[in-house]
Length: 101
Image (cartoon, rainbow, N blue to C red; front, top):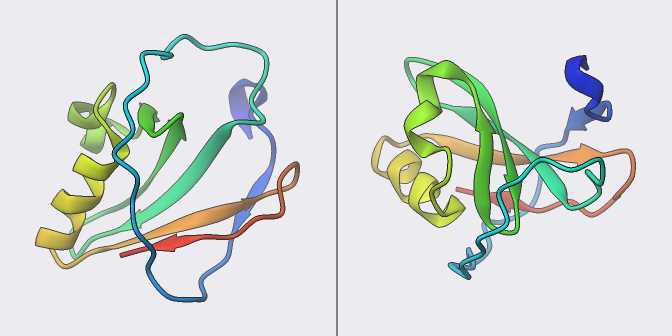
C-alpha cells in the first residue's frame, strides 16, 4: 500500500467481541506500525478503511475524517447505529484476527 503501510488483507469470520474504551494520547505517526490495525468499514452508502493505534483512530478515509483522534469504540458505536459492519483486517506482521460489529 502507499505511504509505507504494510500490505494487509481483510478476513471476515467469528463473533463480535467487546471493544475496549481505553484512552491513549499517542497519536503521532512513527516508523513502528506493528501496533497499527487496519479495519474495513462497510455501510449501506460507503465502504472505507481506518487505521487504529492504541484504541484511537489515527487515519481514515475522507468520509470518516471526523473520527480521526477519537476512540475507536466511538466509531464502532456509530457504525452499529447505521447497521454497518467493522472487520479487522489481517496484518502480515500480526496474524491475530478479531471482528467487531
